[in-house]
View 1 (cartoon, each protein chain N blue to C red):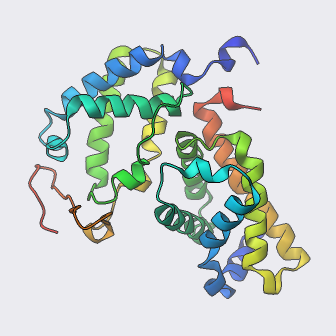
View 2: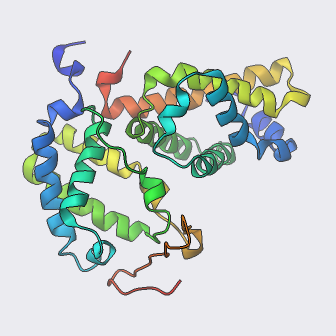
Amino acid sequence: MNFDKKYLKKTWNENLEQADLIAEYFYDILFHEFEGTEELFNNTEIHFQKMEFQKAITNIINNLDDPDKVETYLKESGIRHICYGIVPKYYKTVESALFKTFEQVFKDCWSQKMKEQWQLFINFILETMKKGALEIRPDLSE
Amino acid sequence: MNDNSKKSLFEKLGGRETLDKVHKKFYDDIYADPTLKVWFEEIDQKHIEKQQSDFMQKAMGGSSIYFGRTPGMAHRHMFITEEHFQRRHDLLKEAIGEFVKDEQLITQWLKIDASFKGIICKQNIDDCEVANQSQQILAFDLEGKKIAS
């Protein structure tokens, strides 16, 4: 983890009211700005998906002091996402949508440092998920 | 990248035939297991075998023919504990082991299954959620006795 965990937790906790809306922002941005992504969620109820997403991000941030737990969680998430059809080739799109989401969530305090730190956090999430995904499906390596 | 690393897990395992054989044995054992069979009382075994093979086929890199709900959604009204999950996982391991001899492939298959543990298992019956008014919360103890919700 090459980001400032304390800083991320602090900014998250200082903006909890907004942070609680992260799932709403994420799927709105994903579906409106990235054509075709809504089809990837045809087999799910979006309300349930949003709940899971909110839980996941909160869980990761709350457990940043336990890197093993977070790594296992993210690797498993990478594997599960293969089952939903979200394979590593889509991660660039997810990365952009996540970045725009955090930018929206923290818009009132979106400083250069915030930008850098949350970008590193996003990279960490997706790299770890990818590691998990490639452990079971090395054929998906790009 | 050599030729083998370009092959999907589905291909390496021998395709649909292997999945069907494993899932036949897996559900034969589940439907005979006192802890697990109660969860499947109203589900046709052939249907669930096919659904499981369809789901895993997609996950493993075969053609995408699974159009059912995600496991998290499908199990959200069920009070499945870690012990239930482990029992099921052990039976899956036995079933895979009967038809697949490559340890790495067995591990990869089991990792897919295990990745859903955190999504499916619940700490408390109150964590269950029904999708609509006609759905009921399902809860059984390890002896297969119904738990009142």
